[in-house]
Length: 384
Image (cartoon, rainbow, N blue to C red; front, side):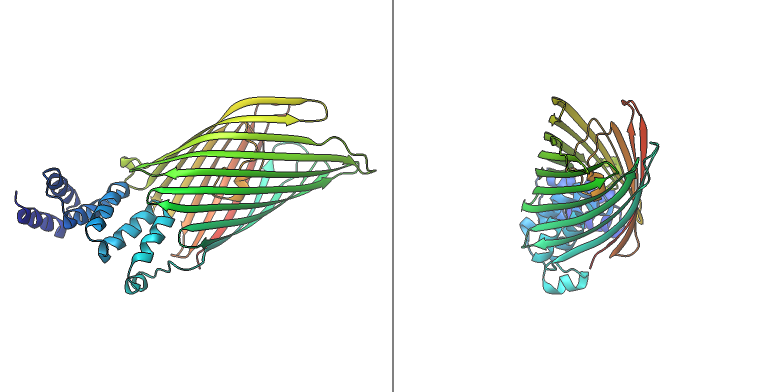
């Protein structure tokens, strides 16, 4: 088939919104050596219209390699990257658009503030004597330079446990930097401080976690090798001033996280799996203990309706203090639970405002006092 005939057939199928036929014609044309800007553009749009964003992405990139300033292709590439959660790359594309196109699409690629959010919540336990935990989180996101986004969050928790009253403060910092298309580096800092007392004792706890990862996103995959180091120190003393030896817990975690956009989901499902090898050392007044163990985490994100996104996760193994989650700060709280699962629902009200809710269950079975914790969090996220 000649090149003009290919274009005629493709355009006819395109006008009828017969996206599968457009894909068939264009893929065959490329296989036969008829590669060109318009073929790649048609093919990318056909995949996009079927919500097959991972298939559309390389064709938009190839089309722009032929004709780098074409506005329609830039627009489709921008929204494709957004649909895949690759906001840094999308913003880089937006900056290359003409000012008229940015204005038409309502884009502000040079804005500094990206979002703010607020979360109130509570944690209920089946343990006798453990009263409900009250928590509040406030977070902001902003850009640094041309290719980096930063996310800050602060968290306050108050609880009473068998007469022991404590308050906990947390700070979380996440940096994401774009190295080049398909490659992003991530670093995170997580600080925890807790103070509490009862009629006889006072306790102080300080924790820090450092995280580094490199995310590579070829085709449908997300591959992230990562390293986390955590340290948690606890000081206990009587109300008369007698201080006991500090206890410390230090953990080094080496991990690999995988993400995948299955074709069956047509851009509405994302699967994630993470395994980590952890080296843990614990020192107390009575004993020193070192051990090695595995952590496993699974996550599924699904858009079941344009106005409803669901994320569910599950992980097992000892889970020490770690900056291991990119969502609610509370999910990073230190614990030694055996199993944990949760569900998060997000409801976009407008283009700038979203409401969301989180339910999380922690189960501790291998213990002298087995228990379950139930967490409920609500939140609002606003994009300026």
